[in-house]
Amino acid sequence: MLKLYTIISAIFLLTIVANAQSRNDSFTVNAEITGFENETPVMILDASNNGIIDSTSIVNDRFTFSGTTTQAPKSFIIYIPLESGVKYAYVFMANETVTVKGDLSDFPNNLTVEGSVHHKLKQDYDKSLVSFDKQMNAKNIEINEFKKNKSWNDSLQKAYFDEGGILHTISQDRIQAEKLFIKNNLNTYYALEVLKYKKSEYSDKELKKLFSKFDKNIQATANGKAIQMYLHNPAIEVGDHFVDFESTNKDGKSQKFSESFDGKKFVLLDFSTPTCPNTRAALPAIKELDQEMTNQLNTVTFYTQNNPEHFTYLTTMQSESWQMLWTEKGNEGFPYLRYRINATPTYLLFNPQGNLIERWSGYKKGNSDDTTLKIKKLMQIK
Image 1 (tube, rainbow, N blue to C red):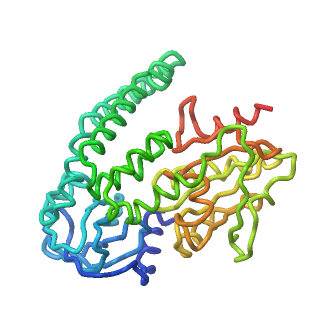
Image 2 (cartoon, helix red, strand yellow):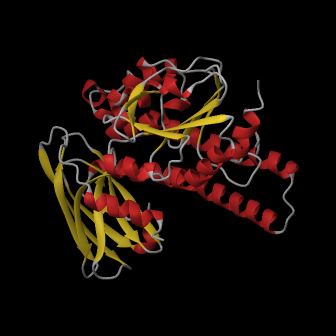
């Protein structure tokens, strides 16, 4: 059986985004990266939709990409599928000539990128977070050792994972470092890019005030418009009724989210994309949960991007009771924006009457915060 990343890579190779926005000029990426076999395929993707901009092969440790982009810088992904897993790295650039150097072991954040004044800020941002990521990795190793030695217990679970616990504290310190980076780099495109992904860490009032400090030209970029749309759509809080939306099912027919409610079953709304590693890890577990709880739970997965081939792949996981929906607008469409999705997978669990019980992002396995266990516990709330 082919591994999922191989299938996803094949889908990528078959899918080329033809309609880029406002293409004004060209970019070139010249790369010299050691450690890969000759003829290893490599692609550069538009990070906003994972569409392929250019593809080639590594020959004698070198490869070159070219393409067109907007005047405003944006994120691209150097994407290299291997049998052992995918290697990737982000480059933040505009219509520039960029040189990338390094080794296979330098992925994803230690490659040398020169020629882009915009990418320099991304490197500064990555460096500001290194210490927190090292701390987090070290603590996860500790946790794995506890589990390996069968000494993991509820007290350790609380000490590491509860609010104020070890991992929670590191995570909060990391968030403060991200906020400091944004504050210190106002009026830069990359600070706005970070703000787009971290907007949920701010209250609406804080976000609006911070966003107002960016230049109008930067506010007018795709990232700026995403923040404005986020502010335009009020949050759906615990206890609120669901907001209905219309989308397309796997048969190409229009379907309303409200059709998932029958007054008897809970409804799990899952915002996911198969290009997200956490989504790929979660899909088998969600399928198993859906089959196990079929008499008590309706599961609805909304595909968050705009690639029909990816949606088709996603529907291969679908069971009879598991609904999968999407819109051609992807993360610019009403469901994604109205539900303020900022990461995948994001889950919203509604009671049979359609009121939100809880919302959370990310997939966990094996701890007391195991995603499927959490859903079962939440369903006991009446």
